[in-house]
Length: 179
Image (cartoon, rainbow, N blue to C red; front, top):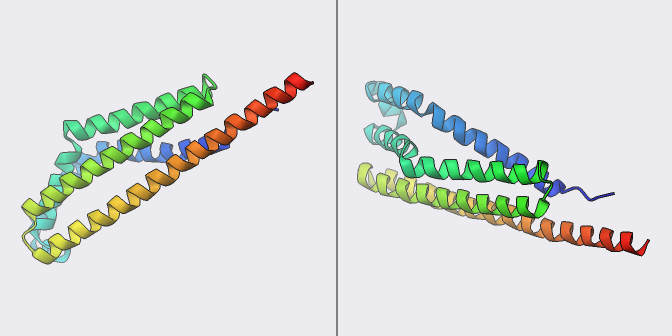
């Protein structure tokens, strides 16, 4: 009986959610821009959410998400995801699928880091309140730590599991040759 790459099924399952959320988020940007522009006109809501700077920062974030670099990274990760799924389910090549998955994780990490850097720049140019700016920058620092931990964790699981999978397959081949 051939060993199944359960680790890759699970990791690609999580990635499916991430890819679908990215696509959905991109499609929803025009609706979000419309909603935030309406909020910009309502003084009562503006006071509740922290003022005009909050809305301007959110709108700038949406514009960044619609930009060519951001869209390119989303498309790259989606294509790498599709290639990984193709190698796993169509070609039945766990090694190529895993390495493609690792490339996707790297692309996602780079995309996250670029987005955080852009967010920091936007916050520094838009947010006037020093405490609010420190809050945004602090949240971005925590985001970087979280993204780094997730990337390292998922990549380590994939790499370690691939090595175990390859060893198990080699043992099956050796056992079959002995018989």
